[in-house]
Length: 119
Image 1 (spheres, rainbow, N blue to C red):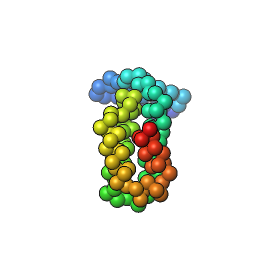
Image 2: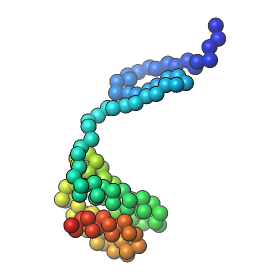
Image 3: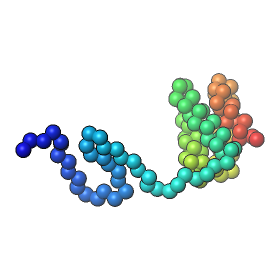
Image 4: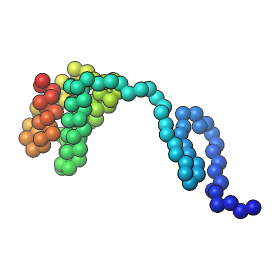
């Protein structure tokens, strides 16, 4: 008996996995913890950090942009995980932005992040 369905074989552990099989299959995953609530200031900073990271991809790569992107990625991760960024992380980001004044003047999103850090 011929069938149009492909043969599917799953081996090994599949705990905490999500998959769907078949032409009309739909898989949705809800693993992990619920999102951490963020206040308005954290939401604004997160949006500005993401915008600046996007802007950095359009600039010539340098040690300065790499260090700034790393600090921004760490800040984004911390806000996403915990709902806020620690003062020490914000201080590091503030210093990097101050050291990157030529970069900040070229990118409006850097100014937005710097402004939110100083408020």
